Amino acid sequence: MNPDELKRTLESLRDGKLSVEEGLTRLTDLPFEDIGVALIDHHRELRQGVPEVILGESKTADQVLAIVAKMAQRKSNVLVTRLSREKADILLSAFPAGTYSGDARTFTLVQKPIEARPGRVLVVCAGTSDLPVAREATVTARMMGNEVEELTDVGVAGIHRLFANSEKLRSATVIIVVAGMEGALPSVIGGLVPVPVIAVPTSVGYGAAFGGLAALLGMLNSCAGGVTVVNIDNGFGAAIAATRINQMERDKR
Image (cartoon, rainbow, N blue to C red; front, side):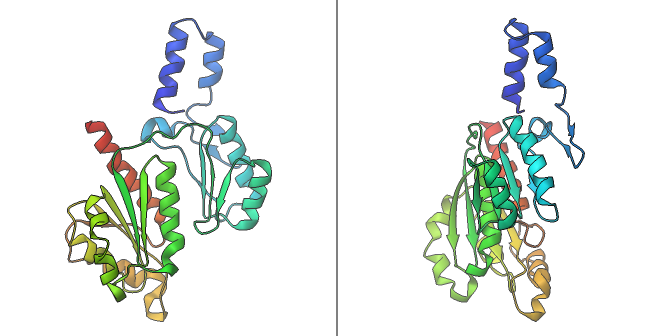
């Protein structure tokens, strides 16, 4: 339940369009709902402006299905991240209106309009190998109501590819930069634009990349002031951070 839905419920109670018993039923499980395998946080959208998101990795197909079913019952929009094709097929059988992105490893189910946020998020991907993390950021940001544009395969090995898209960089409200290897791309972009830059290190790289640790340390030591860094392969976290920045812009308006 989001703030607008709660407001409509309370107004319906006030105006006599909704009985006390019906209102109580709607609000009974508002803080959270215990379904055995999880405590679903139905209150999160009221507190944070975005609904709870399900991490599909390490959960069984039955556990994911149970959580999605309860959220769908509440008419919530659903996002599942880090989901394998096998688990996705089970969800799609139960919820054919859902969508699975193999690139992003995400399942989405949209049951109510997504409120648009101001501004534009630009997701910049250094190389094709980084695409799964970048696509996770893209899908998440769009599910949260952001306008999103992608700029792919513009890493520092061919920096002219990035400079050819300078107008896209300048027109973005927030930029998410996804890169593996040495993780240099966020520093380059951070030195070119005045807007928030959220760096996402990926686990892409050869032996000394240490599964993304080299990119993470490189981004943390960026010489471009103001670059913010999330955890390795955390496209989801970057998208939520970008959403909160856009939320501040909406609140100002």
